[in-house]
Image (cartoon, rainbow, N blue to C red):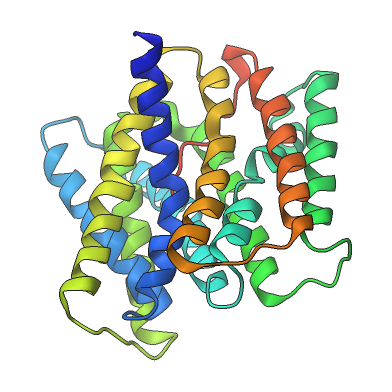
Length: 293
């Protein structure tokens, strides 16, 4: 692929990842959090399930259970925490905290999969966690919003581990479609039962839901998987550090969010840590974070 085309696609997919935090926060004006994200991924999952209907589906109930488990963590857990966190913290802060997940994958991969990482990767993890500490204002008094942001990262990391363990059983597009559909359905049920449902139907709210479902989910996934399959997935995943940048930038442009200086400082360290962790992954042992915002 021509370097310029690669750059355009990387910017496009990470922009869709990062800006979805801001678009989602705007959507909370019209739709309650869990209902909004439930509609987003149920619609996206249904559309993708139609697109992959001719591809081989799992034959065993246990395999459907595995896809359900991935959807529970990778879609329901991650996106539920993100959209709930947006009620109390900025889109930029939520995106920075959520995208600490590659750092957590290093720890979980060591504990649960026995993967051995290089010294530089551990340095990256330590630098990244230091960045989280600084992002939180140099203190450990976690608010509900920051806990939910970190919860999204933890859930994403668990989802990554599950995909690493089970992903080879499935066609990648079938797995993507049905984990989104299962996760979206869970969120939809939670939105109708665990919060007071609120849905203002107007051109803006409909546009936001469709943008999140189609552009920020299906299109973003398609570009990301294409890039991952094109070359070294470890090196490609290093560009995930651009997504929080676009989260902060879009929050500033669209919502006039004021981000404190220490959030930028901590974010810079987090990006550095993520870069060190991902850039040095060996191809055979890389844990690629294949979700998005």
